Amino acid sequence: MGVFDSGADASAIEEALENLDISGLSVSVDGGEVTISGEAASESVREKALAMVGEMDGVEEVVDDMSVSEDEDEDDEEGGGDDDDEGTTHTVVYGDTLWGLSEKYYKDGSRYMEIFNANKELWKAHKNDPNVIHVGWELHIP
Image (tube, rainbow, N blue to C red; front, side, top):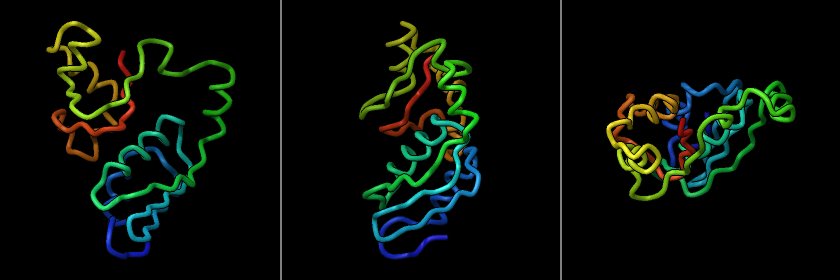
């Protein structure tokens, strides 16, 4: 657990990240600076954790002290097993909605649940509400 000053709440951050595959997760807070450590199962899990924490109230800076599982690193070097083999990646910016992204990528807003389902781990901390979307999230667009 982290040090509590004014700013972010370490227990709330840990709770938000508990559904991501990060072993040995540790969060420390010093005012608005949050340090996250542990071993992420993949680079995408690491990036999602950093993006989620960066959007939380009271967080001014996120210090990344995470490592990525060696198995994932080996797969990346061999070019195998990555979601990027099909589709694309979109970094959420202010004003984005799932409907709008669906219209942009599929020319059909009603297909927004395809994007939601491809990125479900991001929404676990937000009660699986597809209306929640945060700037900085890296979304896989299948």
